[in-house]
Length: 321
Image (cartoon, rainbow, N blue to C red; front, side, top):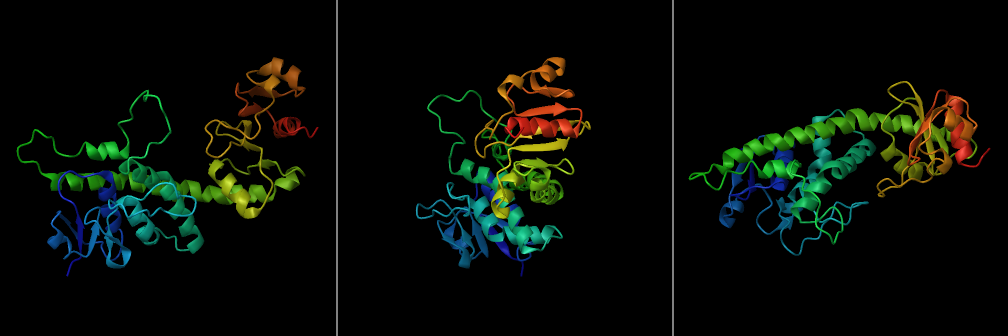
């Protein structure tokens, strides 16, 4: 007999739509039908229930989050936001989903993806559904963002003016929308973000060969590096990196200051203040580096024509020369 997934009827939200999408990526519920009801007697007959029923019991496949007794979070470094049904299903079924939709089976890699997907997608869905603001603020918002995934799902609900609204039909349209976003983010993480981790790890291990301080890293190939720096510093037990050197997409040498995790626009050490906002001959005269090209006004990035020069920029900034 086909399995049956249960969720509530009426207006739908992003969290239970995403939960149902994910369950269809598991082996047990891949072909399951979806019953949308609030009738407890019907819910009790279903194989798994999400976002309705006032019960959280993974052993019985009951995954509601509305009851006050639920305080479950994703865990690890994600302990400040209570889970919605999307986060609950990702927490308990996400590892299986990763293995089912990819060729990735190593536990360590699956765990990395599981956490990264939560950070990039599910944490925001949980916060939105539980009414948690992104920032603490005592002033009115300057603008409202209406193109988020929860916003797009919300607009798929039938209009209040429809005499016979078809919520179920729109619900399945919403599953397609969340599935597209999930797939795009998953492909970015597995095809771009994950391979770059190998490059960053090798570069970090080689940092002391580049400079005895260990505070300067040379990327052997440009790739997304910022997220990896912080986690790998901790896992490898290496010196905190201050500057990263690389060749950008225009084949130019760049030096970039490493940011401070969780602090927007924060930097561990910006490039020297006298250099900031300068370029060309003026900057070369101030810095003493002949082929230096520019330094951003905030000091977060700079450039030169040669590797030797961006390395010298890093060493001067660190007071090593």
